[in-house]
Length: 251
Image 1: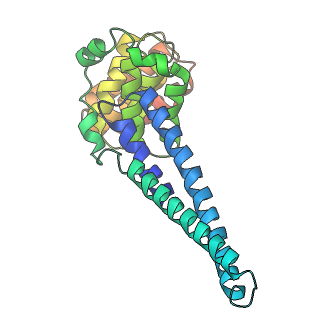
Image 2: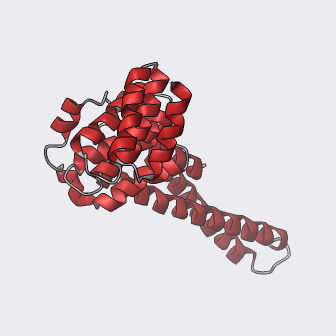
């Protein structure tokens, strides 16, 4: 039961607007410890039950009946303490915040809002390294958890705006939106990357995906413009061939 609570709890903490990366990792560690304690408690209770059953079978014929009854009483007391501890564990798990929709915590991304959020690193950045924070969101993306990934990268660009991973975070956030078929936000994210980081290694890929996303929105003129930029500005990139093929489709 505690494992289910933990699996349900992590996304909530990661998405909650007031939660920080440090809070997320600290609570994950606490719940992991609680889970291990829960498992140990269950093992102890099973052992207690087996010992009590064994004692009950022999106590009527054993000459040390009083001694056995004393042992049984102590075992019953121990079982009661373990049961109480189990109840405390459940109460700890119950303090998780109520489940909310990820969309509530993914604000509409525009160049202005990103610039405002990217002014300086948040104090919570001291609780986790940029690489660890990036990897948390990237792992969600790799596992197909695109809503969590988008929220994680959004949080990353707020907390670690000045790091070398910022362009990558914007790119994968755009990819997450694209996979969610939220093409409007994907376009905004890729446009921000192309505008703010024109010389970055992710720029050709962002331009290509911008062409795909705008095509999905029905803006074929803008799509062709982005794809042509890939051919003109990054002719030797891997995306150049892909852009050429896509242009042939939408002409």
